Amino acid sequence: MLLHLSVENFILIPKLEINVHKGFTCITGETGAGKSILVGALSLILGQRADTSVLRDKNMKCIVEGSFLIDGYNLNSIFEANDLDYEATSVFRREINPQGKSRAFINDTPVNLNILKEIGERLVDIHSQHQTLELNDAAFQLGMVDSYSGKPQTLVSYRKLFIEYNSLKAELEECIIKEQQSVNEKEFLDFQFEELEKANLAANEQQEAEEELEILTHAEEIKTRTFSALGILSDNELNVSDKLSEIKQLLDQASRFSHHLLPLTERINVSLIEVKDIAIELRDFSEQVHFDAERIEKLSLRLDMIYHLEQKHRIQSVPELIVIMNELSDKLFAIGSLETRIAELKEVLSKKESELLEVSTVLSKQRMAVIPTIETEMRNVLENLGMPSAIFKIKKETLAYFSATGTDKITFLFSANKGSEIREIQKVASGGELSRLMLALKSLVLNRSLLPTVLFDEIDSGVSGDIAGKVGSIMRSMSKHMQVIAITHLPQIAGKADSHLLAYKEDGETSTVSNLRILSTEDRVNEIARMLSDETITESAKVTARELLNYKN
Image (cartoon, rainbow, N blue to C red; front, side):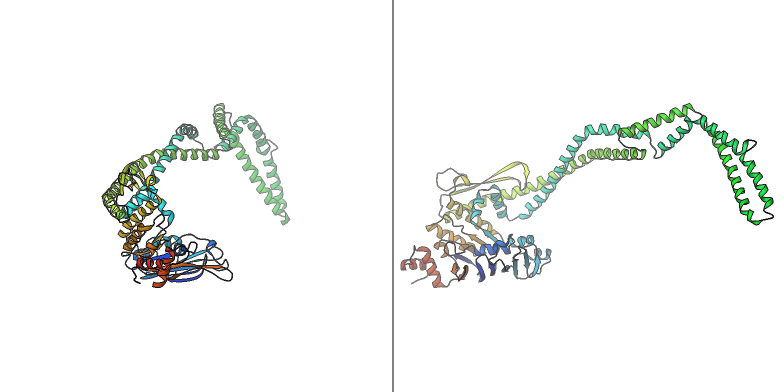
């Protein structure tokens, strides 16, 4: 329940402090006086988004603070879940600075707007004028039935399953599309992969094959050249090896007389060893080189295949071909896994569909169970609102598919007059009838909820005379279970309130400001008399005002 509201620098309000009482409070005032100040201010501390347009003075920040009595409304768990200090009287604060940055607090702990809104929705139901038009909306009608049933967890469970079901369904559809697209691609990928796999490629084989082929192709020339080289090194009469041995012998003898020759002798000895080693390796290599036509053909064919694959895939090495082969393997595996995933998804989706059907059935039964009661209670409330011949029915149809709210379609049917055809509300209800229908529905739903406060922003649009008094009686009846605040232009409704706030404007030196104040008994008489009068408040208007307030002269 709202206890106190403090507002600073909000639209036309420089500063406002107002206490709000339990029971039924009305807010009145001339057109444009700022009766909706409370609505706007409350909306801010209940999580509505805002910008610098709400700042009266663009150089100062706007602060709205509300104190709420929240004890007994099962809010402990939501405070605990959000790591907030729970207090029987909790303070909600919202600040908007000149740069448009917003900050929110609950009991001086910073919170984001989502948390503020989540908790705020459990504290206050704000019904504005435009919301009456929502009565024509099928989703709103279904929501009213669900609210009346008082079992929100079933719908929460259904929606959770519905999101999971839709997610699985979307993934399955995506996998099926991918699989269909990959049917032709798979054949092509299979062919490419098998071609590379059969090639049995090794990373260094191209270079090795090219080198071997070069040797075999020039085998005779290599043998001729190596044979000549061997002759010069060791086989001819005047070979390098013998000459180096002769030089070594001469230097060995000479070095006995000069130690300066010893390093040269050693170098000649090393050269001699190296020449002999070269000769051995040349002989071994020469003996291994043979012209082999069969081997040449085999290597040529192998290299032709490699060159063909490289050209085909537009690369220049065998390692790159191996990379491509591995990539093809991965793609084929992915295509193969699609089939497996599709099978898995179909199985999981079937189970999820069964779960969804089970919960939607429970949800549908809950709705069906309360529909007769809603119809009966609505007829009683509408009769009290001056519509004794009104008929209100709820048609429930079963959808052939799962929607976000189940498998039910709810339609409100209405007839205001005896003998009139009962049809959809939007086709037969006038503005005043819509207002009464909405009030009747709200009274049924809110009386079953644990909501502390409801604020009606001119729900009495299109209502007057005796019916206005009946609307006020409904609001007064509701106020026995919760705090009711009503912005109204009707004296009959204002007269039913327990307390009365007046919205008014004052002209200052440089600007006009709006304000609210609590009216005394005599002030209430004058305000209601003003609402009853044209321009001048008459004594008869005051008498009528006292009658509406049940006061005696």
